[in-house]
Image (cartoon, rainbow, N blue to C red; front, side, top):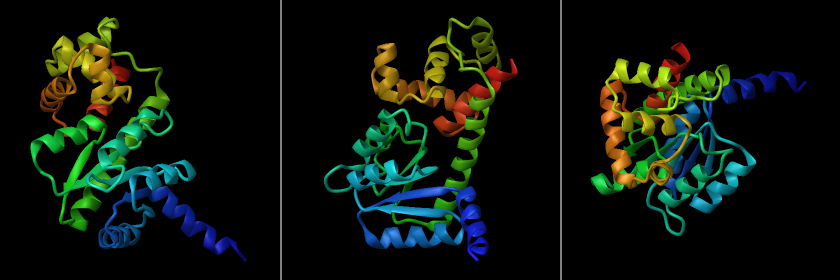
Length: 229
């Protein structure tokens, strides 16, 4: 008797599990309805600490995270998510009314892969969610199908392939290799002795040369190029 209800649950889970974190109930309702109608399983949290607890109970495929919240803000919440190996690869999209470049950079430095501006436009959010989920799954498949990625300068064939194909500098290859390993800008800065802002500048150049817009897409290109060499 329970069999007929099991398949829809499976279909929704296969579509993707999305966690929305926002302290404004109206935003939660708007996004939850839109994502639910699109076939996603939706989880919600009203603040950063609740989001971290929610993730421990059910791992989402993607997180929509409000940047400005009382208590633990979105930037710190994202940093904590990225600091844990079991959650570091979850794509995080910031939702913010702050379009000032300093806040945008802070979001990327914290480990976010993209952002949408408020007021929220559900169609735009759905398009970005679908695109980032698709890229994340390609990246996961590539990692699962290949040995641990090594496109560092010590791996000369892989480095030369990326450098020649995309005209990347040595530093850009180093930054890209750590991005492909799931490191945040702050982590990469600590490893390479650079400031997070300098890492972000190198990444901006990498995005242009690779023809992508996000770190997840850049990582996917790097892994594909490394596997295909």
